Image (cartoon, rainbow over all chains, first blue to last red; front, top):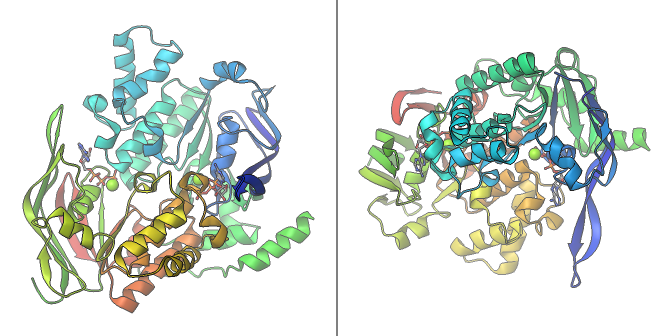
Length: 285
Length: 247
Ligand SMILES: Nc1ncnc2c1ncn2[C@@H]1O[C@H](COP(=O)(O)OP(=O)(O)OP(=O)(O)O)[C@@H](O)[C@H]1O
Ligand SMILES: Nc1ncnc2c1ncn2[C@@H]1O[C@H](COP(=O)(O)OP(=O)(O)OP(=O)(O)O)[C@@H](O)[C@H]1O
Ligand SMILES: [Mg+2]
Ligand SMILES: [Mg+2]
């Protein structure tokens, strides 16, 4: 077991009024428990706004959980102070959902990719770092010459690949990949997914793979978890969940995937969020 | 420009000057969109799709970018064809967000982090439509509701960073649709949405299309979405059009 989350909870305070007092909470994550084995890819899908990114950010301790426990490689890291987290930073990485917001606009891509190598002192000379940077760019199908360019000089999909390269720089054990292939065309997407499979095999890389693309999740995941409004509503191995979904939201979700062939019309499972929410509330009460 | 066309791009070439030399991001590109039609633009990452849409909007950062040659003919709400590349910035500002609205590929690049999303939608509405603050606010909340943002009254006061990735994307969509544009440019508008909400948003765009004859330039990697939305498709590669066909 590499990662274990127990009853994770994250509420964001809602402030307002003249004194900017806390007037309530957004319960982004109300109760999520899951385990990820070493070398496993756990797909995380769900409604937009259901708390997927929040779960990912809590695992990396980029935000503080309101409740619950996070155990990484046998160590409870839920409340680990910042300086004790540092050695773990090398092993735990995230690919952010919004690549532009996560790349420093004033640094060249080469410097962005060399930064973690410098901070963790893994590549001692500039030559060694440059070589690693070129290697990383090639891994994500970018031209090593691009190292001299700035983030705004790239296309959306190119920026996304820079985010992937940065996460891979230190050969981490665990990556939260948040919509990491959403801006990529099918052929580059296939190559990035192949790269992940390869790293999984050779380095035992473990991933929490957050995505709205259900076909991608199916192709890369060992197991799949489905979130709805702050909770997990289904968790099963990938094959089972796609062929035999149990939960009503999962069923509706799978049936709504658009099909590339215009002559084929899929029948959508009717979706009634109010009725579903009522059922959720009664079963968890 | 033919009567039934809303947009005609003729031999457009866009360059960027970088430390590594000049990049031709778009080369000699021509295509058109008919009134009420949805044209999908697909193509590999870095092939020039976003640059094309930014050039139509005259939003290419310059320097380092430059529209080297070509024309963009556009028929606005007044029915008169205008050539956009030759317009002044002031003339162009009247067209942006009013006649032509754009949903940007990365919402955070176009949402202002220091204003609430509600205020930003209200501003966009007030800029082009003679509406009072109250009317604009009511319309903004209605739009947030249409794009499936839960508790729109409360979410109105959210700052962009307080929303999820998909909610930010939907705010952009709400803002773009609120002005009922003649041409909607949507650059990967649903990548952060689950397929149930995506289907509702696509339906919303199609409704606008049939109600007010909006034309759509739809950039996407998702061939399922192409099949559902597009009347015609243009395929780009390395800055040039390599294929064009019916949807
Ligand atoms: N910093 C924050 N302050 C306040 N609320 C927040 C903050 N971050 C997230 N939220 C709220 O928490 C909820 C879950 O957001 P999250 O980003 O985790 O969703 P998500 O499942 O990743 O959605 P998407 O698929 O759209 O990216 C949303 O209601 C969001 O508005
Ligand atoms: N400001 C800039 N400076 C230099 N080069 C740029 C700039 N903007 C874009 N480019 C380059 O122009 C080319 C086309 O970029 P564009 O953003 O149009 O691609 P795209 O087709 O939208 O790709 P994606 O699907 O990845 O979003 C890319 O090679 C990109 O690196
Ligand atoms: Mg998210
Ligand atoms: Mg693009």
